[in-house]
Length: 203
Image (cartoon, rainbow, N blue to C red; front, side):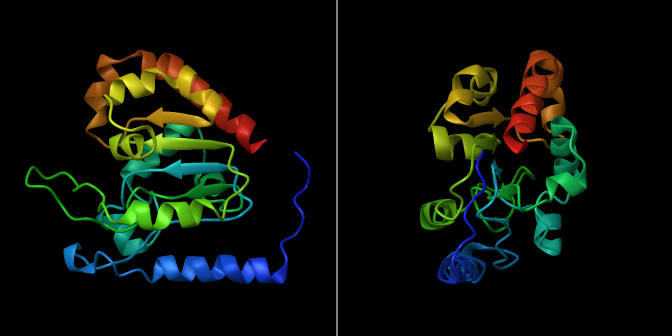
């Protein structure tokens, strides 16, 4: 891939202005039990985009995306250490909802706020022209990009998604442990293909 032309000062200022606006967003404030704290990482040089669902409580507290057990499991799936994972020059992180949305009555996290992605995803994605591969992590990311459909079918169809620069994964929470046992092809077929695709993307 040829070296990118260094951005002009005006382009840098425009990117920074957009990021400041996203971090200052208060559109969903009335619906957020812990208040707004958008958590994401964007860089114009990023080649890999990781799109999850929404921050959990630990991520909300620290402001560091995937800074929890789900993040540990995701990095294990990727066979990637934390230093590589958090290299924002190469890996962007943009959840379906930028802020922690609260809990459901059954104890799981609530869905991402519906106002968020339509407002911010087009604007933030436009700042990343070099994205080659997008990891869709969890059902909410699947629905946002691919539309309705069963999670397992989407994960199994990685060969169909990869030519379009997409790779669907389950959410790496503890709730996925039983799903992995019932679907051994995930470990046997999907994870090796995922690691190869990510390695090729990052060069």
